[in-house]
Length: 172
Image 1 (cartoon, rainbow, N blue to C red):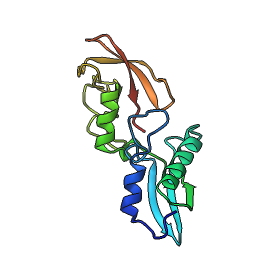
Image 2 (tube, rainbow, N blue to C red; image 1 turned 90 degrees about the horizontal axis):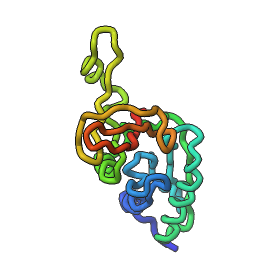
Image 3 (cartoon, rainbow, N blue to C red; image 1 turned 135 degrees about the horizontal axis):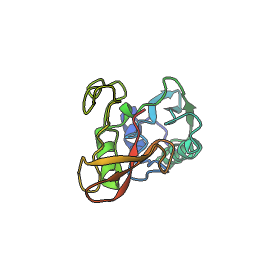
Protein backbone atom coordinates (compact mmCIF):
# COMPACT_ATOMS: atom_id res chain seq x y z
CA UNK A 1 0.00 0.00 0.00
CA UNK A 2 1.08 3.54 -0.68
CA UNK A 3 1.99 5.23 2.59
CA UNK A 4 2.15 8.70 1.06
CA UNK A 5 -0.27 10.32 -1.33
CA UNK A 6 0.77 10.37 -4.97
CA UNK A 7 -0.08 13.40 -7.05
CA UNK A 8 -3.44 13.70 -8.73
CA UNK A 9 -1.50 14.04 -12.00
CA UNK A 10 0.01 10.58 -11.40
CA UNK A 11 -3.43 9.11 -10.67
CA UNK A 12 -4.74 10.62 -13.93
CA UNK A 13 -1.82 8.99 -15.78
CA UNK A 14 -2.60 5.61 -14.24
CA UNK A 15 -6.29 5.99 -15.13
CA UNK A 16 -5.20 6.75 -18.70
CA UNK A 17 -4.16 3.09 -18.88
CA UNK A 18 -7.68 1.82 -18.01
CA UNK A 19 -9.48 0.94 -21.23
CA UNK A 20 -13.17 1.15 -21.95
CA UNK A 21 -14.68 -2.37 -21.80
CA UNK A 22 -16.71 -1.86 -25.00
CA UNK A 23 -13.98 -0.11 -27.00
CA UNK A 24 -10.63 -1.44 -25.75
CA UNK A 25 -8.49 1.00 -27.79
CA UNK A 26 -9.63 4.06 -25.86
CA UNK A 27 -9.01 4.82 -22.21
CA UNK A 28 -11.73 5.94 -19.84
CA UNK A 29 -9.78 9.21 -19.53
CA UNK A 30 -9.64 9.78 -23.32
CA UNK A 31 -13.32 8.89 -23.55
CA UNK A 32 -14.06 11.61 -21.00
CA UNK A 33 -15.72 9.30 -18.47
CA UNK A 34 -13.32 10.24 -15.66
CA UNK A 35 -14.43 13.69 -14.50
CA UNK A 36 -12.30 14.30 -11.42
CA UNK A 37 -9.58 12.90 -9.18
CA UNK A 38 -9.14 14.19 -5.65
CA UNK A 39 -7.64 13.09 -2.38
CA UNK A 40 -9.79 13.22 0.75
CA UNK A 41 -7.45 12.24 3.51
CA UNK A 42 -6.02 8.85 2.55
CA UNK A 43 -8.89 8.11 0.13
CA UNK A 44 -8.51 8.64 -3.59
CA UNK A 45 -11.87 9.83 -4.87
CA UNK A 46 -12.52 9.29 -8.60
CA UNK A 47 -15.62 10.80 -10.19
CA UNK A 48 -16.97 9.11 -13.31
CA UNK A 49 -19.89 9.94 -15.60
CA UNK A 50 -21.63 7.35 -17.81
CA UNK A 51 -21.74 7.94 -21.55
CA UNK A 52 -25.51 7.65 -21.24
CA UNK A 53 -27.91 7.06 -18.38
CA UNK A 54 -28.15 3.38 -17.60
CA UNK A 55 -24.91 2.43 -19.37
CA UNK A 56 -24.40 -1.25 -18.47
CA UNK A 57 -20.60 -0.91 -18.52
CA UNK A 58 -20.38 1.57 -15.63
CA UNK A 59 -19.94 -1.07 -12.93
CA UNK A 60 -17.23 -2.76 -15.00
CA UNK A 61 -15.53 0.63 -15.47
CA UNK A 62 -15.78 1.42 -11.75
CA UNK A 63 -14.27 -1.97 -10.88
CA UNK A 64 -11.48 -1.50 -13.45
CA UNK A 65 -10.63 1.95 -12.06
CA UNK A 66 -10.60 0.63 -8.50
CA UNK A 67 -8.50 -2.42 -9.46
CA UNK A 68 -6.00 -0.33 -11.45
CA UNK A 69 -5.40 2.05 -8.56
CA UNK A 70 -5.19 -0.75 -6.01
CA UNK A 71 -2.61 -2.45 -8.25
CA UNK A 72 -0.56 0.76 -8.02
CA UNK A 73 -0.78 0.60 -4.23
CA UNK A 74 -3.69 2.92 -3.49
CA UNK A 75 -5.67 1.06 -0.84
CA UNK A 76 -8.61 3.40 -0.37
CA UNK A 77 -10.46 4.22 -3.58
CA UNK A 78 -13.93 5.74 -3.68
CA UNK A 79 -15.84 5.84 -6.96
CA UNK A 80 -18.43 8.60 -7.32
CA UNK A 81 -20.98 8.33 -10.12
CA UNK A 82 -21.94 11.80 -11.35
CA UNK A 83 -24.89 12.10 -13.71
CA UNK A 84 -24.98 15.89 -14.04
CA UNK A 85 -23.80 17.46 -16.16
CA UNK A 86 -24.53 14.66 -18.59
CA UNK A 87 -21.58 13.20 -20.50
CA UNK A 88 -20.98 14.57 -23.96
CA UNK A 89 -18.77 13.51 -26.83
CA UNK A 90 -17.18 16.97 -26.51
CA UNK A 91 -15.32 15.52 -23.49
CA UNK A 92 -13.43 13.03 -25.68
CA UNK A 93 -9.75 13.85 -26.16
CA UNK A 94 -8.28 14.27 -29.64
CA UNK A 95 -6.07 11.22 -28.93
CA UNK A 96 -9.22 9.25 -28.15
CA UNK A 97 -10.86 10.29 -31.42
CA UNK A 98 -7.75 9.25 -33.35
CA UNK A 99 -7.77 5.87 -31.55
CA UNK A 100 -11.45 5.35 -32.43
CA UNK A 101 -10.81 6.03 -36.13
CA UNK A 102 -7.78 3.71 -36.17
CA UNK A 103 -9.98 1.02 -34.62
CA UNK A 104 -12.61 1.44 -37.37
CA UNK A 105 -15.15 3.59 -35.50
CA UNK A 106 -15.77 7.05 -36.92
CA UNK A 107 -15.42 9.62 -34.13
CA UNK A 108 -18.03 12.35 -33.63
CA UNK A 109 -18.08 14.62 -36.68
CA UNK A 110 -19.09 17.76 -34.82
CA UNK A 111 -19.35 19.31 -31.38
CA UNK A 112 -22.54 18.92 -29.37
CA UNK A 113 -23.09 22.66 -29.59
CA UNK A 114 -21.84 23.38 -33.08
CA UNK A 115 -23.87 25.52 -35.44
CA UNK A 116 -21.29 25.37 -38.25
CA UNK A 117 -23.02 22.41 -39.90
CA UNK A 118 -26.51 23.85 -39.89
CA UNK A 119 -26.29 25.09 -43.45
CA UNK A 120 -23.71 22.68 -44.88
CA UNK A 121 -25.20 20.40 -47.49
CA UNK A 122 -28.75 21.63 -46.90
CA UNK A 123 -31.26 22.03 -49.65
CA UNK A 124 -34.06 24.50 -49.05
CA UNK A 125 -36.44 22.94 -46.52
CA UNK A 126 -34.23 19.90 -45.93
CA UNK A 127 -32.57 18.85 -42.68
CA UNK A 128 -28.80 19.29 -42.36
CA UNK A 129 -26.76 16.39 -43.73
CA UNK A 130 -24.03 15.14 -41.42
CA UNK A 131 -20.84 14.25 -43.30
CA UNK A 132 -19.14 11.30 -41.60
CA UNK A 133 -15.68 10.27 -42.79
CA UNK A 134 -15.11 6.56 -43.37
CA UNK A 135 -12.50 5.32 -40.86
CA UNK A 136 -11.41 2.62 -43.32
CA UNK A 137 -10.57 4.60 -46.46
CA UNK A 138 -11.03 8.26 -45.48
CA UNK A 139 -13.85 8.90 -47.94
CA UNK A 140 -16.51 11.43 -47.06
CA UNK A 141 -18.90 9.68 -49.44
CA UNK A 142 -20.85 7.82 -46.74
CA UNK A 143 -24.45 7.32 -45.75
CA UNK A 144 -26.42 6.46 -42.64
CA UNK A 145 -27.72 2.89 -42.65
CA UNK A 146 -29.29 2.85 -39.18
CA UNK A 147 -29.45 5.23 -36.22
CA UNK A 148 -28.64 2.18 -34.09
CA UNK A 149 -25.19 0.59 -34.21
CA UNK A 150 -23.43 -2.04 -32.11
CA UNK A 151 -24.14 -0.05 -28.92
CA UNK A 152 -26.71 2.69 -28.17
CA UNK A 153 -24.06 5.42 -28.49
CA UNK A 154 -23.24 4.46 -32.09
CA UNK A 155 -25.01 4.60 -35.46
CA UNK A 156 -24.33 2.34 -38.45
CA UNK A 157 -22.95 3.88 -41.63
CA UNK A 158 -21.63 2.51 -44.89
CA UNK A 159 -18.99 3.90 -47.17
CA UNK A 160 -20.12 4.32 -50.74
CA UNK A 161 -16.53 4.15 -52.02
CA UNK A 162 -14.92 1.18 -50.23
CA UNK A 163 -18.38 -0.34 -49.55
CA UNK A 164 -17.48 -1.18 -45.94
CA UNK A 165 -19.97 -0.73 -43.09
CA UNK A 166 -18.75 1.04 -39.97
CA UNK A 167 -19.90 2.37 -36.63
CA UNK A 168 -20.12 6.10 -36.04
CA UNK A 169 -19.84 7.35 -32.46
CA UNK A 170 -22.89 9.62 -32.27
CA UNK A 171 -22.47 13.16 -31.11
CA UNK A 172 -24.37 13.69 -27.86
